[in-house]
Image 1 (cartoon, rainbow, N blue to C red):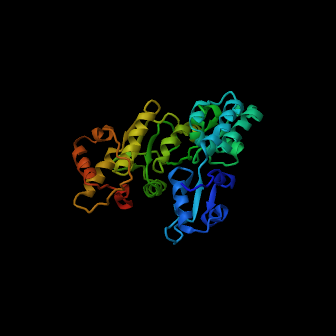
Image 2: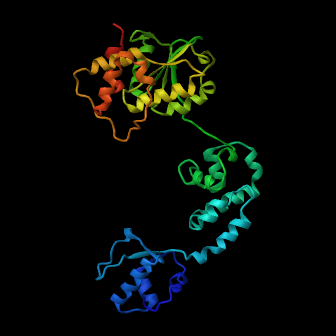
Length: 339
């Protein structure tokens, strides 16, 4: 390799270097010679190509920008910082073994450490996840959508240790009868919920052969968390309902929602499928061109739903294996309305 002091790359005190600045800094007018040095610096790990910066159009081509990778020796001071500056509550093992990762997460860890040192009393006061996140980092969704939970895990901390509570989306419900011993129907999709509400307002109380007192809008998977707040959301007459029926699309997502609800809340509610609705959907779909479900759907379902569908199990399996699904909206206002 040409006699160029690699330390001068670090002496530029930049994380990202523009290639023309680097050539000027090295004072090498011979471009092929300069390009060879840059490629060697990439090969030995000193520099990394910033491929989004695109090539410079010269021969041989170089990228317009390069990232300076920290010299391992230059990271040694971070070991002392981890050992001596971390609060006692912070685990040290992960970051001592991953100093470059610590360098990436450092500013967030420092903010968290400052919070533990200077605002520890606030940890005794519960906050929502976004409230706590903003209190610590000034970024309200850092715990929920950002890297916050990974950093906690790396430090051996937990959300429980931050004394946060979740805030599931509140669910919307409509009751035609406000008395105890309710028959509740959870409806996955908005259009079907509004259609049944419209019919309830007009005085109808039975749908597809089933008497229904209250309908809850499930909003897809949101209902899975929202039911945690059931007793704090509903009026007293809805506490301890007689039964809870579920009705959604016949696809992996809809089936998965029902099965997870059943597993999670079976000790609280008597949850069953609205089998009359599902049977009607299957019969109406016979001979029709059906939509294809998204490849992104989680296909990890159990046998709970299929077993409850009894003799219709094979027809549903055949449908799913063909990549098709039956939307809830196949049952429309005309079908739901009592003659």
